[in-house]
Amino acid sequence: MSDEMEICPQKDCVPSEELPSLMQMAKNLASDGAKIIKNATKGNSTLVDDDVRETRWSVCQTCPRLQNDRCLECGCFMKVKVAFVTSQCPLGKW
Ligand code: SF4
Image (tube, rainbow, N blue to C red; front, side, top):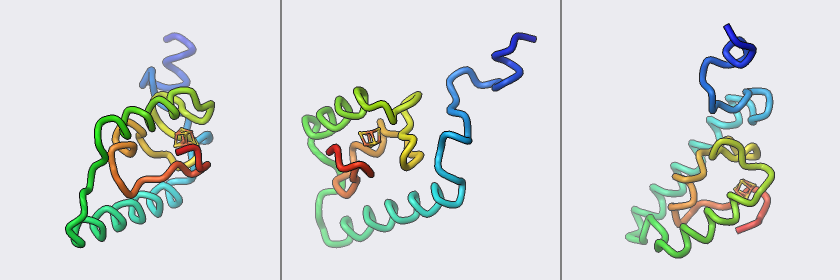
């Protein structure tokens, strides 16, 4: 077995010690989900336009806090998170 396999069987995973705690990520997910639902129930658009999504994603792609498409600040999968109107960068970059 290679060293890589001993560390992580999933080649592209993020080491858990680099992410927020599971409890914090659960809180983040619940908070983000609540914002999306609240926004949708007001009849507002849930998703941003393609250009906004692409601009956000391009910022994330140059951010040192992005690893394997996950933000190390919030633990979110950013390809998904950038698409929602209510999403915010935890560092205020977008
Ligand atoms: S959400 Fe913000 S902190 Fe996280 S990867 Fe994107 S730019 Fe970086």
